[in-house]
Image (cartoon, rainbow, N blue to C red; front, side, top):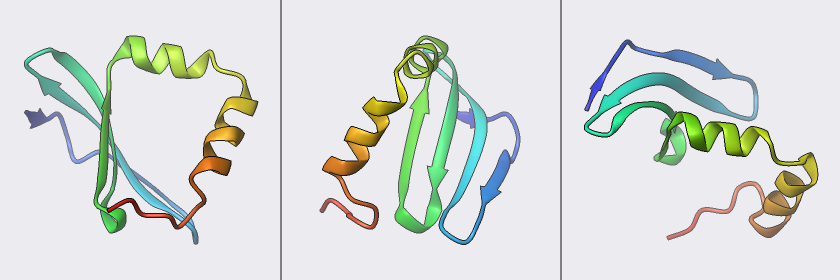
Amino acid sequence: MEPADDGIVIANEFAHVTVRLVATDHGDRLEISAPKRARVVQLDARTLWSLAAQPPEMFSELLAEAPIGFIET
């Protein structure tokens, strides 16, 4: 898995993530990583489309289930 570039950093006082395009054996993926939390997710185009089609309430429910600051071990 080779990164296409160093990516784009998005940060504010609450969060810091890096977004970049990576090539995998199964095609290109958007990789979103949160280095301070040691979390990485890779999403293909179909998954991104599916997430974008969800109502905002779904994300509110997800955040309510896993409060900000919660780290699963």
